[in-house]
Length: 74
Image (cartoon, rainbow, N blue to C red; front, side, top):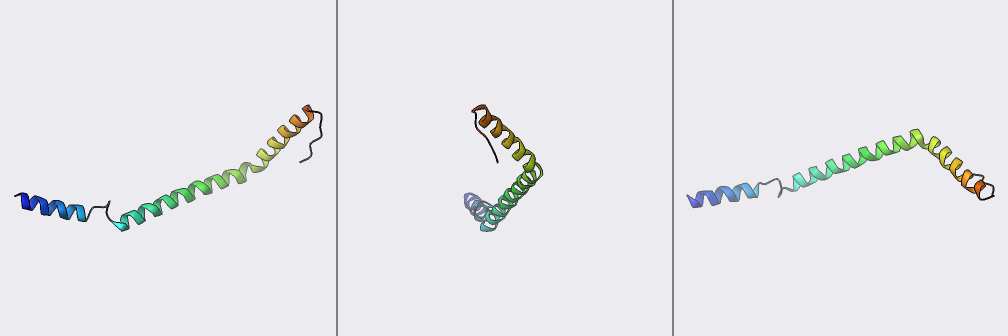
């Protein structure tokens, strides 16, 4: 009885997804796809709001510089 349990346990461990190189490769591909999607969303956000943000930053910078008595030209 113990021998059968040990054989089955050995077989299960040998074919475990944790040990499989194919499973590790699939996980890496999934992570790369998730990171790519996040980067695409970030890029789309910057593209959509980039000019507005640039205008806001330039306006803030000019106010800071003018408050110090200087001239700001972006």
